[in-house]
Length: 144
Image (cartoon, rainbow, N blue to C red):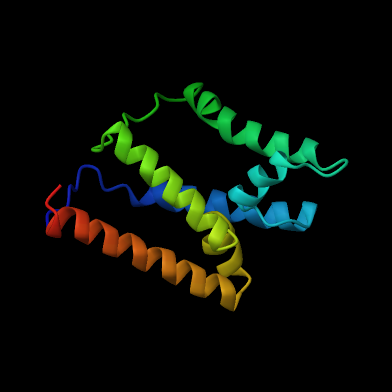
């Protein structure tokens, strides 16, 4: 294994983690809801009365954040080493997994673990193990 020390950026990663943690904590304290993306977006598909505005604002913030970032710096170049079909299948599997697991990485991994939820610990351990196994199989068993 080689580490690209030029791309190693612990301070920006720490700052990003702190911002995510503060945002999740503020969201639960001010709104009384968990900042799980799948639950927020899922609630837009069948919105309850008076429940859609904050969900739309949250999703708009997710979509608008890169445009705000562009005011201060250039967006980093994204490099995706997968074809369109692979990305579609991966997206569908992630969607099915978050539905089956009653939450996503943000809901369980960030918010659930910080609340010491045993269910979130099991969910996070499961999706991390599945991710490790998938990467190992794809890269080392099948050689893609």
